Structure formats: C-alpha cells, structure tokens
Length: 567
Image 1 (cartoon, rainbow, N blue to C red):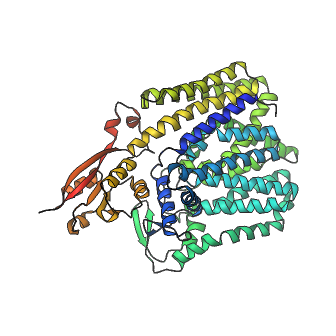
Image 2 (cartoon, helix red, strand yellow):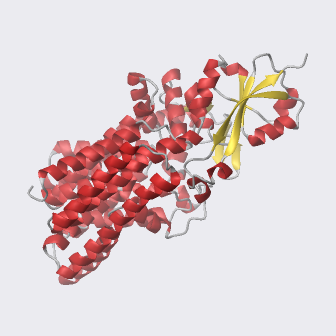
Image 3 (spheres, rainbow, N blue to C red):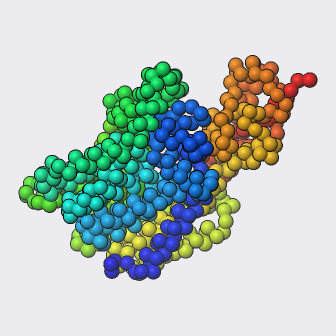
C-alpha cells in the first residue's frame, strides 16, 4: 500500500504474534476466566450444551456461546490454558480483519490497514485475549456484523446480508441484546449520515431478523427448558448481597431483558459506585497507545459533522462515530460498569482514529502534526517506563531474553522515529513501543503474578496424595473456580454447621484460607497442615503487592490440611 516499509510491517506482525502466543500459555485467571473454563469443562463432561450448569447447579448469568466455543476446543485438544484461549484469539484475528475490511469499505485500504494495526496493538486487545471473557467474541462479532451489513447496503449481495445477521446472532448468544443494539447504532448512524433514509425500511431486514431468531432458538429453548418450564425450581441467584434463592425464575426474561436493559432500568440488582465518566478514563488506558489521538479525532469528527449538517453536505461517514458514541453513552447509563464492557467500541475507535491520523500526516497543518507527534512520544516514553517498572520494581529477577526482545522493539521504535516519514513516526514508532511493553506484560508480569494463584500447585498435591472428590473440602473465598476447573470436582464447601455435624473419614483433606482456618480452630475438628501457599487476587493488584519488597505483606496464606480423625 506504500504507507510503510515491508520490513517494519513484518516485524510488527512478528512481535504481535509473540505477544499473543505468550498470552496463550499464561495460567487462566480467576475470577471470570476460570469460572468460564470450569463451566466449559463441565459442559464437555456432562454433554449438557443447551442447559448450562456450574458445579452441578443451574447457571444463569452469561449466554452460552463462549462456553460452546471453549468446550469445542477442550473436546478437540484437551484441557490446557491455550485450548481455552485459542477460540477467542481466532475470533480476535477475524475481528481485526473485519476492521480492515470495514475501514476499506468506508474509506480506502490505507485507512483500513492502519485501523487494523491500531486495533491489534491496542492494550484492550492484549488484555481480552489473556483474561478471556465474553467481550472478546462480542467485539469481533459486532464488527463482523457491521462490516457485512454495510457491505450489503453497498453491493446488495444476499451473502453479505446472511453473514451480517449470523454474526449478530453470535454476538447476542455471547452477551445478549447488546449484540444487536451496537450494530443497530452503527447502521442507523450510517444511513442518516448518507441521507439514505429508505435503507432503514428495507424489507430484507425482516429476513435478517428471521435469521437471528432461528439461530437463537437453541439458546432460547435451553433457557426455557432449564428455567421457564420449571417455575418450582429454586435457583441460586448471585447478587451484590450474596447468593439469593428464588423460584419462578424466567431464563428468557433474564437474558433478553434483565442482564442488559435491566442495568439501566434498575431491574438488575447489580450496581457499583462507577460514575458517569467511568468509561472515559477506562478508554484512555484500554485503547493505549491510540487513546489520546482517538479523543482528538472524536472532537474533530463531531465538529466536522455539525458543520456538514449546517452546510447540507451529503454522504458523511457517521457509522464509526455513531457506533462509538451511542454505545459509549448507553454503557455509561448502566448502574453497573466494569472496564471490559467498553472493549466492544474499539474497532470503531480504530477506524476513525486511523482516518484522522492519516489526515494529520498528509493534510493538516504542521502544527497539528507536531501536537500529535508529541502525544505519541509521551505514549512511547510511558511504555518504556512501564517496561522498566515491571522489570526492576515488580519482578526484578525476570529473564534477560525479555529485556533483549523488548529492547530490540524499543530500538526499532527509536530508529523509526528518527528516520521514518511523518506517518511512520506517528504510527509505526508507537506500535513498536507498545509491543515492547506487551512482551513484558505477557512474558513476565502475568506469568509471575499467577504464582500467587496457587490452584495448579494445589491440584498437583491433591493428585500426589490421591485425594478424590468425596474426600476434599474447601473454604477459599477466591480461587474456587480455578480449583474447580483444575480438579473437575464438585467442591464440598466448609461452613460452621457442616464442621459440627459431618463425620469425617480417614484420608480426608481440606483446602482452606485463613478464615477457613479460623472456622476450624473454633470447631471440634483438628487438622494438620500438609502444605501452605501464598495467595493474592491477581486481577486486583495494589502498590503493596506490586512492590517486590512489600509483596509478602499483601498476600495471604492458604493451606492444604489433613483432617485428623480422633482415636
């Protein structure tokens, strides 16, 4: 395409491949990823694909597509960290390609290519393929749906219509109605910007709705059979106040209303203290190293759109702006917000940021370019600082090979900045700087923090002692899901009542935290510590934990103990 030197693009893909391959082998993180892995494993071993269970209990939280995907790769390859993550990585790759295709469709190949590179090298993409949740598939399915349905409006090919609505159905089977709303936001914005209002009322949309409805039948049937057909069933519902037992639970209502719209209307009990600007600062770090350019691009696009409306201009590109802003505002209205919810807008952000960056490099005044270059220099400096921070402050005993690889990436970033063209200095230099940081994150940071998630070590000891499901009890507040996944057991929980009433047999063990040890100390049960393990909730790091000198004060101990039987 003439934008970049071939060697630089080849190296970008090589470094990106290394980053994502390193992430494949990082231990599955608690809480969400390990929970989804345990459910997927249970799905394979029970053969129950339409009715979803967790530890033998009815599960009602996330739609099943992620579990179907994971269980497929578990069935093919077995239970490995990489076989759990490979489906999401493949979906992400297709999502990057779809971003290129959509950018090309709306603008040209150059803008599409730069947008795909921006998405591939964004921090959110690296995180979502490491700590795997539903958002990885949702993000890719949404951009595939928007690309194909936009292509249908261009070329009127029936195959584009079908593929677009199939992708929309996958998005809905991954995270509910939001998988339909986001493509709707984008496509309505697109037709309004082009002033082709008749496209909103095409009869073919009814065929598309029918395709989605048909594809949703298996999921809907499973929900109906598991919940709606059994109003007498008592279901454990997880709420902010703990587990609540309810009957007459409608699985269909939960997925199609409560889980999405209920977070806005208040029908969903989950709320947190995240304010209306929560996703603003979340976007800044999650779309690193492009977020500052993206905010500038958004502001410029809004001003330009207003001017175009006043002038009566036709064929304005509102798809990416509308898809981004309407989704952003809708998510901000939710009473419960988590950082990964915003990942779904990253493909839209990548496209309008790419278009704006190319304008700065080739069209805008030199003052604009100098400002943009200063922003990207700050991002590269920040990436270098994070590398040094991880390698000297957090885990100073890391492998020298990571320093070499990261150093090479930083050296290339500096070389491109000194010798490259305007666009190379803005884009390629930033990509190498970001990839240098990601090498340390996936190669050192994540592997080392999972040492404080000791499920693997605990399970090895359980197997060495030949402990079966009936002879193991647990009391960990966290780490439960990864332990369930690694053992495949339905875990027996410890509480005060069972300690006072249960008759324990020889060769019975418990895996407990410090609170569990206190419960046992206050009971009639005596134990012998077999092994102790340092534990920390690794997805919630604090400065005390990050500092290698004070880390021991931040962790708590967990214990594998043998329950002593009185003579």
